[in-house]
Amino acid sequence: MIEKLYVDAEASKAVFRARLADLSPQELEAWRGNTLDYRALYAKAKDIHLAVSRRTATLLYILARTRGARSIVEFGTSFGISTLHLGAALRDNGGGRLIGTEFEPGKVAAARASIAEAHLSDIVEIREGDAVETLARDLPDSIDLVFLDGAGSLYLKIARLLEPRLDAGSLLVADNAHGAPDYLDHVRSSGRFMSLDLDKDVEISVATHSMAEVL
Ligand SMILES: C[S@@+](CC[C@H](N)C(=O)[O-])C[C@H]1O[C@@H](n2cnc3c(N)ncnc32)[C@H](O)[C@@H]1O
Image 1 (spheres, rainbow, N blue to C red):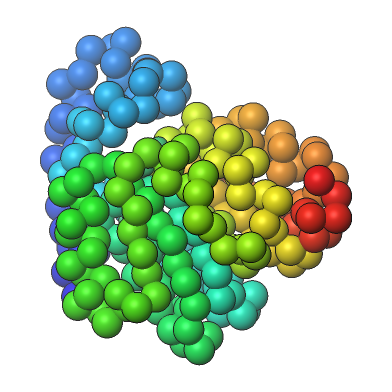
Image 2: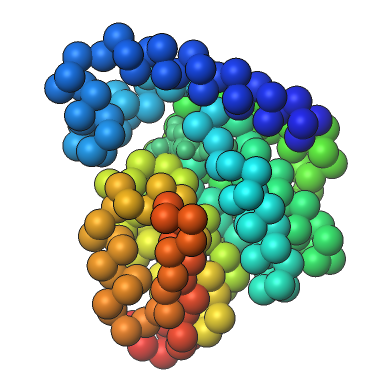
């Protein structure tokens, strides 16, 4: 099933490229610079995966396994490629809980179907709605790994929402991190993380302290 999702993701990239070519220069600039209303931006990609690369998906699995993660939060599920890798890592770690969030209903339904097909429904919960609301309630006390892959303009806000639940050694992983300069400044300069960019676009940050102690 994961192969089929990768094939679909690749095909949807071409559709999306053609769609971007139809945008006005101002709309294109807003899309690239993350400056337009994010709901309007993502409404143009209801049927497009915008998925992590195979390398990033594998990296997520490795990070979740080596962290021994039992508790993961993902911002930006789309059709679920990253979610399936993180859910599989939890399963292989002996079980746990992954809370994902996505505001496009069609993507939520498709991701839930893939999660069920992968026998991960007992581990993975997808919350439908805006992450600013869905991740503001009912979270585990402690979070081992956060994956940020939604609107870049919200990375810092979402990270701050979840940060009090990070322990020493918990990981923040942000895809397309160049689109979130305020977030990059936070993880690189707040003194709360060791942080590194990989492949130019993925920022991995490890909490150096339990945030309950420093916040
Ligand atoms: C880059 S894609 C995620 C790709 C996914 N992680 C994968 O690997 O397949 C970003 C997704 O985040 C969703 N999204 C963006 N901002 C959001 C928000 N504020 N709340 C919920 N979902 C959001 C978009 O609809 C889009 O499907």
